[in-house]
Length: 351
Image (cartoon, rainbow, N blue to C red):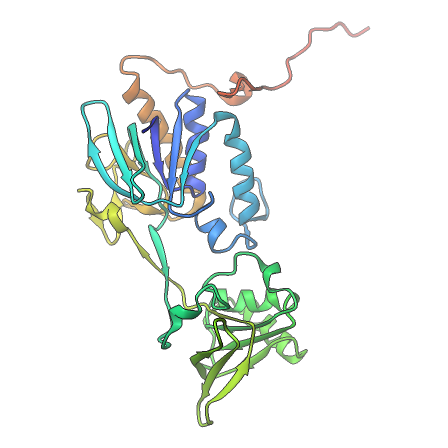
């Protein structure tokens, strides 16, 4: 059994930053996440894409932000249960909650922080017969590591930002990039549409519209796809990879069965105080929560995590007064014995 002060469900940026804020208050954290690595959407969906609205970073790649957050919390030694999904939540007694995962791992904590982003994600899959037979065998729903496609033939299907952006990026990585969309018009950033047009003119991207991929062919792996274009007979295109990017469907999963107040697939919280749910001691922070004026931004999740940790501290230390000090004054003491602090002022006479 794993015991901790705060059990965080979700290892995205909000959940990771909560570890830091909890550490400043001498509270230990453990994180559960269904993905095999920390980072949430940033690590799984777009690790190489830049983010422009993180304070102090004019631009930072999503994967780099995750690495920085992991470095920031390292001294607070959080525990991780990765590749597992939180299934049940029960109150053991007045002090402890118990959460059990789909693999039977038991966790006990004095407070629960649900930081599951938009929930678990399932890709919207094209209606192609036997599509599951080719998954992870040349059929990919995400671009996790662009170098995986180095000097390979790639077919991308879709008409949104993801399809446009990855077509642009892989044009300089893959040996051949073909973009297929069922309409002539694309729904994405104007700059991206113009870049695809320019790369098409240079012969770096093959564009097929309006058209759809109707079949996948290959012996144990993707070797070709069948395209049906308006007014033309269906034909095959040989390829090493097929990447349909039709978006994702978020789902709360088992969390939706925990007795929480849910509104439009999000958890209702008290934003006037501490982002606590209708269950005392259970909080929801980041994109997974909702309240009047909610903005689904990473920086808002950081703010919510900070106030949540202050509330949990008061819950775990009733009657104990906490004096907030800036880290520039108090420094940061890690659970591993490390200490970070500003350089001390020196009293010295100047001749």
